[in-house]
View 1 (spheres, rainbow, N blue to C red):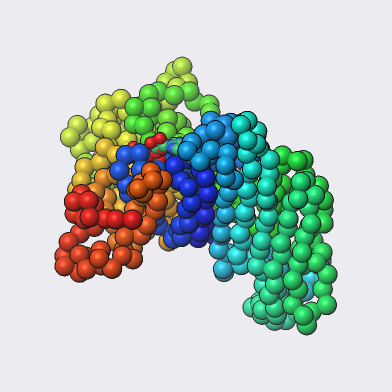
View 2: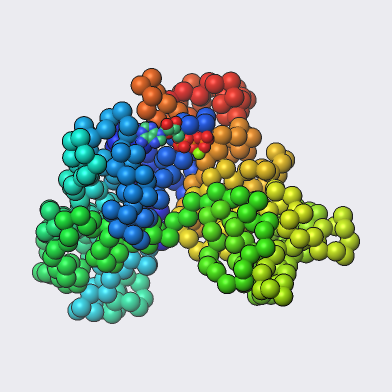
Length: 420
Ligand SMILES: Nc1ncnc2c1ncn2[C@@H]1O[C@H](COP(=O)(O)OP(=O)(O)OP(=O)(O)O)[C@@H](O)[C@H]1O
Ligand SMILES: [Mg+2]
């Protein structure tokens, strides 16, 4: 699976214009109301478009009035561009009809813009296009799909939606006599969209790009230990809710598998040494409650309602980090309720897991900076005009000098020495 390596946004919530490069692990720090949650809500917006369509996604953001910046209003378009990297990715390979050649997507970028109708809440799609770079591969023994593959050429594909009419342009390596349908068999399958539909919503988008795979399943976790402490019904969604409210149910399914239970117990003991065992209790009314055995209370399991908030948070974090298959995970304030001493451990876990999936976290807690690699930190603040801006302090020469002189990023942040 690829990662989102760049995102550009214009006229969205507190942002006027934003361009930000992302890595596997990204820690966004900034004061209250600096724009951290606004930034991650772009991912929610894109997810909602895929799952519920553009109109619904806009109303889920509070309508066009609140999707765009309240000061800029309808004067400028809203736009978003997202670039995704697929190098070395086997998942996004297409076996072409002739059986000898495979198409492998190496980079995808998707851009769309909305134009607002002056004085009204309506909008129209001003631009909508998908651009991909691809490699053509041939199996060394003339059978694609087996053995080592050889790159025989590269090209680009652009799909454009103009008022519902789709056109595609392809650039095919000169020495190969291939048709565009042979490289992307589905490229001509969809010719029209509804006037308010985006490429992002079509199956066409899903097959070659894979961006949709990343975005449609993205979760923005914001754990509320109060929710996880309640008994919950036995039936329900098996995926963890973003607020952690169905933690007991998800844990129950997980702990039924012996090796998962062992792995989970080891991970949790590694952070919280006082945890002896964990289980999910099922009551006669078919409700579930998660319980822990602590070293302090020998043989008695304690119900979630009596557990500490930090314990619940760490349980939810371990579950999402190590037991979910999402390619992109966003966690708001993962260090909430967690003792400063344990924050280092939590960051270590996230960093480790980010080797396999992309992780974005937000925080305003300097303690998180203390244990983060300076290069992983993105600083978000309002500029003089009140718009949110994002920078990487590590790239700032001044900051580099401070860091060389043993001043930590956390100190620079608390003393207000980080600048945009
Ligand atoms: N459409 C909009 N236009 C302009 N400003 C907006 C818009 N929507 C939200 N804001 C502003 O964004 C701010 C909230 O930003 P956000 O929720 O991203 O903060 P945050 O950095 O997550 O803070 P915290 O650390 O408190 O969670 C508010 O001050 C609000 O006025
Ligand atoms: Mg926030």
